[in-house]
Length: 265
Image 1 (cartoon, rainbow, N blue to C red):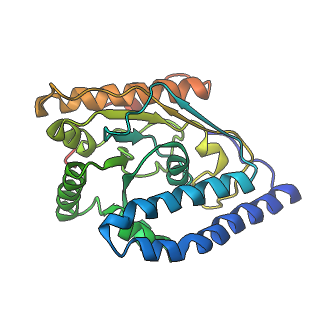
Image 2: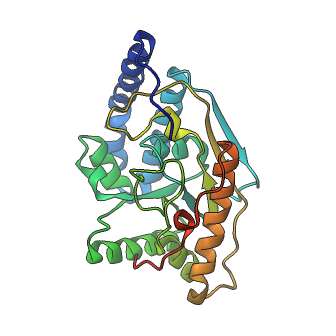
Image 3: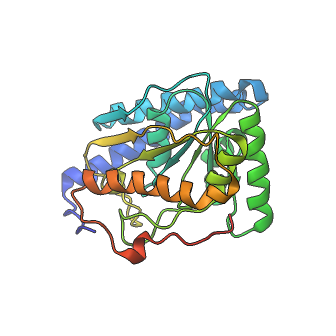
């Protein structure tokens, strides 16, 4: 971790400007969220409004963006995108970067955020990871979405780590079980700098920095069984982690940080 930059007048102004852009542009597209969540067949249009919101925010906040694809996505193929999670900026970043229609799997606390919670609850899938029932229902909903040809975007760490940022914490199993059972490719995604742009430090003061998303090559799950969950999870972790450390010029984390413990969700 690095020390916080000094709170200058310029940083104070930038903080006000960024959060004003977040709120104002969201208010502008919110009526469309309400409209496009009325029918299931309209929800792809609701997700498209999220992409418009993300592009507007990054553009008007003068944050340079670099999206790196290591493969050419097949629009007829649904994917399960697995990304590291260090910032509240990660959801807009994936909306900005990833093509097509996909469902976010996010923590239940998001639905409590005024207006944003309405959008998330009606467009995506919220999970309470402390509730076995909620975790089970999330798996069922996710599999049903995949059966409809929809992709998923999951943060397999399950939450934004509250320490040791930007190093990864152990991944949970859910995304990898779904991928294997439904024979859907896993696509590792590295978001290397959001922890610098908008740190989850309680202050939420953004800084100007390149927003980059690296979309790695898909991992085929066609011939995998549930016995391969641990191996698939570790392979995904290692791909994301190697790119994360390389982009940030960081040494490899300790064995304790890298351990892969069995999980129940």
